[in-house]
Image (cartoon, rainbow, N blue to C red):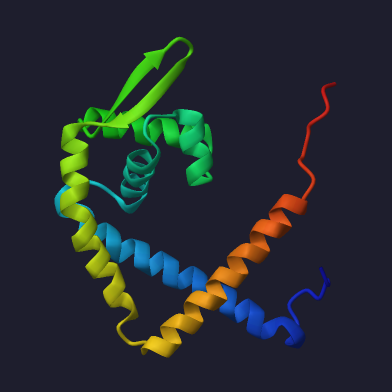
Length: 159
């Protein structure tokens, strides 16, 4: 990785980073507004989707799929359990998470609506632009995964 700081040479990359971040922030805000009548957030929807796809799964597995801390997952899981959308069942030392019938029904209602809503954010792009955007984002994602895998794990030494 070249170290340039903020310079003319990396200006376009930095501006692209800012645009991607802002697109995601605004997209999440309006998606949260869209989901408000269903009493869940985008983050909670993501948890429900991961549970649906991988159930039953442990809280640790869920945290890995979501790339967030166990503590962050714990809070969301408790909230979704309180809403009756998921259930945790103890199997020896591990609690496994699954959707309830209510959670499954909610996802079946939301998925097509949210899919149409989020797809509409790209209506301004023609098919070729959309394909290029997908190809570019996929390339960036694969590059970041490769870089993440190459990073040494930080291990705190015990004193």
